[in-house]
Structure formats: structure tokens, C-alpha cells
Length: 331
Image (cartoon, rainbow, N blue to C red; front, top):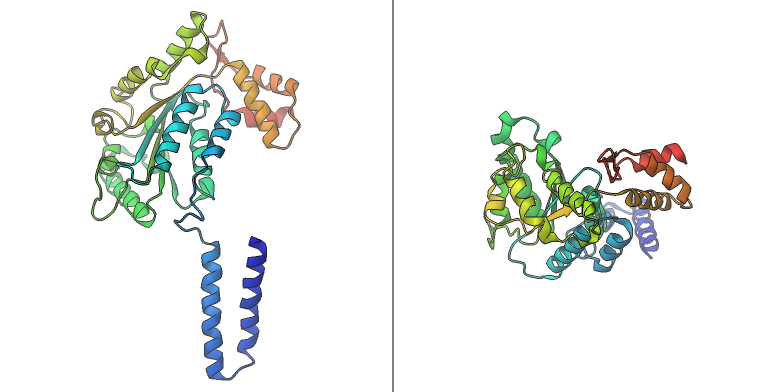
């Protein structure tokens, strides 16, 4: 249906071009006007806009993606699904949704951000309404913190003015210079509007390795006690996680008002991944590549990774981060 509409529009546009040469000046002016209108119609048809055609939350899709593509993260899956679904179904939220995702490398923080975007925006991570900031790339010099603060405020205000359903992802929060993130505190607070702009329907997601040590220690304690990792609950991690992040003077969240004023809705812990989860990641990646999943290949990939503690080899040091390159080698 979409292709047929595009064909008709293009056919009409090209026909107008031919007709221009066939009429007198007055008629030509009218035809050119029609052509310009058609041109705008074609442009608007393809251009992403801030409306339900391009932005529509798929709760079923997110649930299915979390169930079938994210492994070993029962706490994160549950929180993400409830938090995002509740927020997107609320026509009048009191504040933006603020999620802070914490855990060791390769455990799924970036991947979950991608899943959220894909189930809200038609263009997913390529949407012009999804904005990713990487600390070491966008804010590398501490001496420029004052400039970064001003730029960050302008970027967020400008983008939310353009679309209230904007999403902002801040990667490498553990490498961000302390104090910088406080510059956006007003946009995350309970204001109806700031300078005529409402931020209440936007989503802010922070990604960080900070707090990963406390998460790992809890998971290791459960393992040593012979308890199933699925027994770990948010209450076992949330307080220690928020405190360790808040008091880490090397983190972008150090003594931040975002935590002090309770503006972060959920601290989401990502548990370290075990051998079986790495195997699941490898099998899922093969499926995504339209390769028949091969258990033997998945086992070879998983065995090739480094695990810790060194003697017990319980958790993958890099989680599932290097799975793609390992599969390139083994397939």
C-alpha cells in the first residue's frame, strides 16, 4: 500500500514536469504551483514527524523482545517493561521518565535502550527524536564543563520543543565529569512547563558501569550460598546501588541533585552473565543473522571468553559484548 501511494505521487509529480513545457505562461504558473504542492506532499510523506504515524508504543513488542532477546536479567526486564509501559500509557505524566541502568560491561544496558527505542519510534535508534550522548565523545574536557552545561541545556530544550516525545540516552555516565549532569535537573523535575516548554513526556536514560561492583558482589554472594540468581530482588540491590553511585567521586552522578532530589525513577541493576547466558546470546545472534542456531558453535564461543572469579569461572568478564566478533571467527 505504501509503495503504491509513493508511485502515484511520483507519477503525478513527473507528469507535472512534462506539462510545464506544454502550456502558456499563466497555465504554467498554475501547474508549477501544483507541482510544488505535490513536492511538499512527497517530502512530508517520507519525513519523520512527531505524531502517531512515527511514534507509537508497542507494549507487546517490548515484552516479547525482553523475553526472547535479553538474557539473565530478570530484574531489569521486569522494571523496564512496567516503567516504560506505565509511562507511555499515561496521557498526563507529572514528570519525564528517568531510568538509570547500571552494571558491568556487556550485560545489556545499551541493548535495552535500543529495544525501548525500537518499540516507541518507527525508526528506532535512527529516529531524529532519539538523542545519544557519549561522555568521552561529547564532553571530553573537564575545563569546558561550563560550556558543556550550556550546550546540553540548549540541545535538550531545542529537541523537546521540536518533539515532546523525545528520548535522551546518556552513555558512559561513569566517565562524565561530576556536576555536568546537574545542568539538566530542571528538565527532569515536576514542572508543568519551563519557558513555555513541557518536558513531561520525554524519556531520559542513563547508562553506567558505576555500581557494577556492588551488583557483582551480591550476585556472587547468592552463588556462594547456593541460591538461584532469580531469587535476587531489586530490594537486595537498589539502596546499595544508589549510594555507591552517589558517593563515587569519579562518576557523573557524584553528589548529584538528580539522586538527592529523587528525580531518578528507577535504578535498574544488570546482573553479571554466566556461561549459559553467553550461550543464549550466541544462539540469538545466529538467529538474527539468519544462520541456523548451532549449539556446538555457541558452546565454542562461550568457552572462548574469560570468566571470574578465576578459580570458579562463574561470570563472563565482558558479558556478551564480544559475541558478534567471536561468531565471525567460528562461523
